[in-house]
Amino acid sequence: MTFGQTATLTIGIASDRPIQSVTSTIQQLGWSVSAVSIIEPVWGQSIPPNGCEYDSSMDMITVYHFRMRLDPSFVDGNGSVSVRIADLDGLTRTEKMDLAFEHAQTVIESISAKGGGCER
Image (cartoon, rainbow, N blue to C red):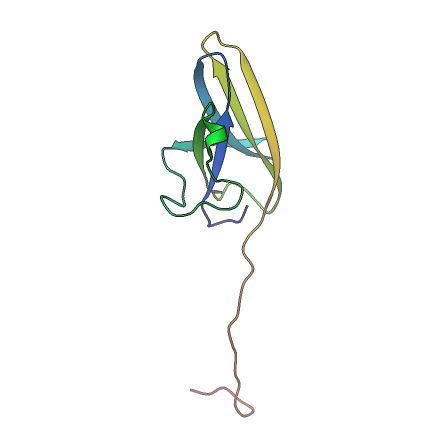
């Protein structure tokens, strides 16, 4: 994940049991921040990225979206995102995915120097 950019974590759940809650957290070095549940992914109604397409084989899957954005409490390095699913009886399942957190590279378009000193 890159600092300053917003991503969508999309979770598809197929369950025979009624789902009570689905929550997600971003974690690093013992620190965690809740990922906000959203109705629509960041790509909106436009064509989704590869791997995020919906097709008819997914009719029995309930899809959840979470907004993922690294805040200043995180640093460059390894981190993770966890998803916790609880059913109506309180039975839970947690899945974790490892991520790399990084700042975007600084890009310098062009620099020019004239003569031996500073131009004003």
